[in-house]
Length: 378
Image 1 (cartoon, rainbow, N blue to C red):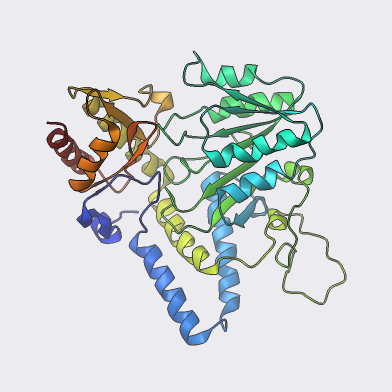
Image 2: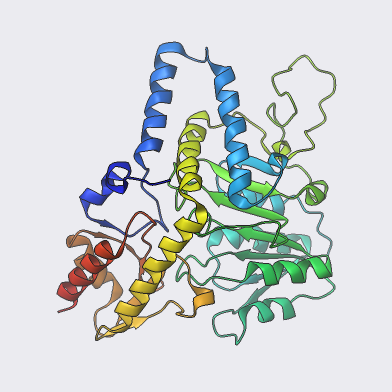
């Protein structure tokens, strides 16, 4: 599928938006989906609610394709990544002496829910992956017979450090250890395959690389792992055929719907379906290829600039959609102000400038950025 990027992404006319690792702008198709939903709701209310149900079912199917599972029953629609992580962290039957392994420097959402389990006698082992000779080996070596779960971000939020999920998943499967992945910085930017990576749980918000609104997220839970989570929320939507209110059997669905306690975000579903369709129709291999091409361009060109220090890892296996750098004499906050004034949308993370362009941007936009960067640093 070919896309008229200038038509589908009007933000291209508004400057250089290199901040998809924070909040991604909606494509025109997602914006129109929300407008259409709002217009329908204003004029007809919920008269077409059956169509909303069909759209929800279609979204589950497309998200299953996106993450690489064959079953829509593995897909739940939650509010955000944090809810997905908390569903796992508070749902596991922890025993005193159990431990959780995770990398140092995780985003708070993939750290705080695990740290909270210390009150239940769980040891939290945080592993330094950036200074390790082999990050995956360091994480695997931190696991032992008392490790119940390994939790990682597929891509680290501050500098784009990408982990080998297949190697980690294989190690967890061999040791009967649960494997959780925070995929918010990968899903929508690079291909994902939960089966190949032996992932038990995965969560990702829609508002970054998936180019959709805040307030809706994908939660994947492998069938074999679902019985291992005690439900922490109860409500009308967590059942097969949830609209049958005059029932005697209130047994939660066997599918991942069991984690959806309350009313769905129907407007968010409309937007997310439009954006996911855009990504899948273009092809995630093609999306990922363009994202990584942008990364290679930035790594190569930033590395040649006087005074620029790359803080993202350049090795091919560590590359993602995020590139971070600092300047040897200009503080990051000062440089960020100059870039913002020059029309570049980016952020400061860990004393570095973090860039995160998406697939609809290309070498022309990146070259424009390099020009603006040289002006800002001279």
